[in-house]
Image (cartoon, rainbow over all chains, first blue to last red; front, side, top):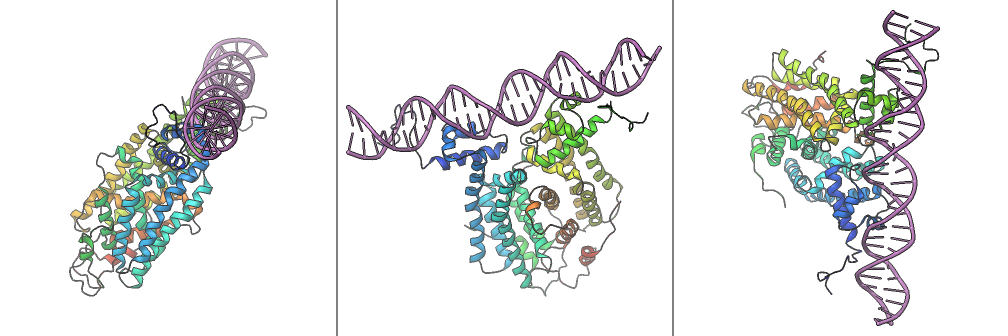
Length: 234
Length: 234
DNA sequence: TATATTACTGACCGCCCGGTCATTTACGCC
DNA sequence: GGCGTAAATGACCGGGCGGTCAGTAATATA
């Protein structure tokens, strides 16, 4: 009765499980080889079915691609926004939380391949590109920008154009992801992500130029910010 | 006699000019559509020849791709290294020069498409990826890293891991390029590159956190660094 | 066990595009 | 002008892969 004892069965009906398995296989291969170089025969084979079955659930290669992106994105974006809603406290702390939460839930998982995929393919699939931009990028932008604006309003951060600052802060994060999925294999000295992120936060908050020893007027001392080793969220 | 009066000639012999024209056409299309989606018929047509002619000068699509990358890279990398050799003065000034020189000679030209191309395709062509890494990326890394180390040694910059700092400084630059060639078309508010770079330098040197008013001990005042509007090199 | 239903298969199709080559055409040379 | 060379052409080939569908085997029902 249970699906294990299939002795000589050539295949079993698993209507519910197929789509997820196909999308997982497709994500792997899309990330590994890119959209164009991925053959649907291979996707089907990796999912343990035939190509015909794939077409029972997805009407075309492009539809499969969209589904992969969509389903991969949903969990990805929600986590970030939840953090913003809940948090109350200094802005730099929230920034820290977001950065490391993002890395752990996206950067370090196979989901991390999606941004690379989107950067590579968004010009060939403008519709998906727009979708990704609207559903992920612009939301991520808004998230980080509001963190910055909060910090500026409270005097914790200097006043500056929050739109540009937001981009400058996010750029190294996304870039790390892209690097991991492209040139990292060439690089003899692999990057330690934690150290990279840590130093990014330090650099962005304190700058390259040394600070004068006597700072007693500002809201919070920079030294403290740079070196504290917060326990990671979750 | 001059090549203009070709009245009814169907084509002319231009053995010398063909390779460059073909590579220029290929660069355009590779950047626009990606490697896989670019058809050699189109490349040839854009260069004003037939596909057969293309194969007179390049033995395969991959060879054409390599040639495009190689020839596009040569002028790109040399300029940067020349700057390092020649410059004598404060490190932040050299950094500034490099950043804007790079943007003007690469970011703003069609050459700017090459990094995007390489990020997208380096996994599919590891050989070219390695080549690009060795000839461009690692050289660029070394360049920026030595700028930083110079500044640290002189006390102009804080002491920190120069390898990571280098990556954090370069990331927003390259990211701007990638953005321009991917999602920019989705973005309603287009980024002003000059402002972006300016703010990047400011942020990286001074940090987000406001500095105390009274800083009279350090080598050079941060305020001066952030706002000076240097004339661009070249 | 017999029958109806449907998830799944895999052989097949046709187009697209990288790559070839016999032929044509420009051009240097005498 | 005639000839030899080689630059350039464009029709053609063939493999690969997205997409199809008639058939098959698992399962639900009774």
